Length: 600
Image (cartoon, rainbow, N blue to C red; front, top):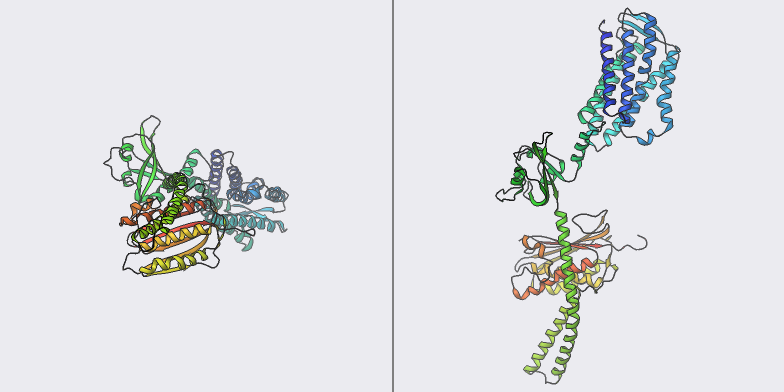
């Protein structure tokens, strides 16, 4: 047992070192300052135990050392609770003045009771030195209750934080601290409380100050290993890189990947370990091109926001804005290459939507002027044809020709109405529209005619709680008629057709990159067919005026129908999208603003 004084001396030195180490790391950090004071308390405790466990020490000296050490062995649980509150970010509680009355007042009272012989009243000689004798008052029970309550409260705070936090690093730290404090409570309570106080076994020396070293080392390990409590420029940079939205890839001078952040792994679809050590060409294949990013990067040329295509693990092409720069050491020599890739898929989609809108606006500007004058001329032509037809007896060849010319002129008037749909002055109503009524009318009036030559099953599933939309019923009916007509014509002859329609209520909480819509409530409508589908190369052109995938030249005029749909939906502040697979079918998805009445 003669080694015990040396052991306590060593432990006390370790506590002193940890206190200085933690404080120097971040003197202004609240967590670091509390932790430094906690370690100082533990060092006082351990140094007092040098004299308590020295068999040849005078009792008076051991008693004075024990009283001085009470600054540590009484206060440490209070400072540990304080540390745990700061570590878990309990800012609201730490601002309460009553908290400090509890954290500082209770240990101060117990230290006073120790110094006035109300806790320990005497020293008893044992083989390994001196053991303090508890008083017969209630104060020893209060001391042990204080230890138990403060430590269990700290454990609960730590466990609750570990369970709720989304920060992986913080969760690992809390787990380490939880394990360490559990070891301390079990072993320390055994040697300092259970054996001497409850079981009256005095042959085992008090070793709690040594066991608390597990807790101190656990906390410092969590700091050193995960670098969370002390913020330095290095840890700040690491956290920024790991949480940044853009993809960051670090290469060596041969172009091999050294490390990458989560955004890069998520964008590429690869796991981090699948890319480390591989060449950057795995993400940018096709190195034959002279201006390929891989060649320029390896040749140590800085890239400044140049557009390239990144190939994901599943073969998808993603347009990215790529920048790169050379990392140099203190001597100015190149040591590596850092690449930052920004996904610009959403930006390109938005640019396409803007271009499409400008196209329709220019068409509308032209169509609005032409359609007005053309309509006036058609009125004169139809009037003259009508007068000429009445001058001739019915049944003659000339009469039949005039009737045909008049019918063609009427169709021309319908065409001018379509052009008027693009006119900037052609506004729409903003009224309450029940979509179920539109689908019923379209099915009754239009689809029966369209379906007369084909075997098509038409299914509409509208939930009872589907919200009405805000818009123009006549215009929306025109949209549905055009989309249903497209779906019917997409079904080839000889195939059993299927057109499915369903809808749902949705709420957009914020702007979504793939949907150029404001936040709010919408009705989402799906119109799906099992027709021939649209080639991938034509998907982006499907809403262009007079674009058609039909092989029959005489049907090319139908290409205006989808453009009208796009224009009308856009004027309703909605959105229309299309997905299609050749040989499988096409799905149109519409978003229309829900009608919100005065009640909400």
